[in-house]
Length: 192
Image 1 (cartoon, one colour):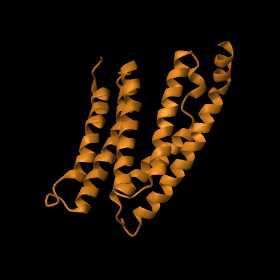
Image 2 (tube, rainbow, N blue to C red):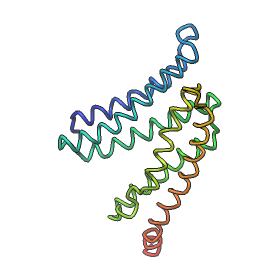
Image 3 (tube, rainbow, N blue to C red):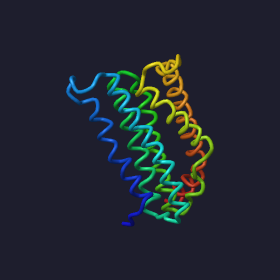
Image 4 (cartoon, rainbow, N blue to C red):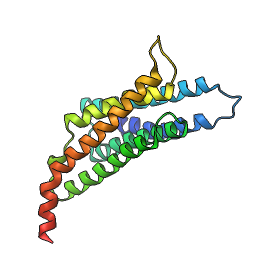
């Protein structure tokens, strides 16, 4: 297993997951609800920034690796899933949203793994639709973690709109990836 700065940043993102969750289990006298929300938001935003940084540094320092390419999306999906579960527990988003987003990530990860195994990974490469979905999701989650107005902007309302948009884009992008893979699925099914 290679170890370099980009992979270290990815591991730090994974280590941040239990910290994000643990904040909400601190004894009540240790932090106010607002301080918990602020700390969770900062952890999530820092993790999102390391996601950008590890990819940038891997390319810039020529330290890309198969292990890093595997670990990076796993770290992203784990962080998003953890944030969604926390938000459901806090009553800030619906379980249906979390189920759609987490379910799509599992489905598309499995699809990509299978497509790579059969040599057809290019047909399910990341699309612009997937990137827009990720952007909406990564904006919504810190807003819902913070949950308080910022400079007159209602983070609760805006975050809820964005997470619903992200869920709809999630379904749309899952349909897109499945449609791209469908010819291979049919071909493999006919071979049996």
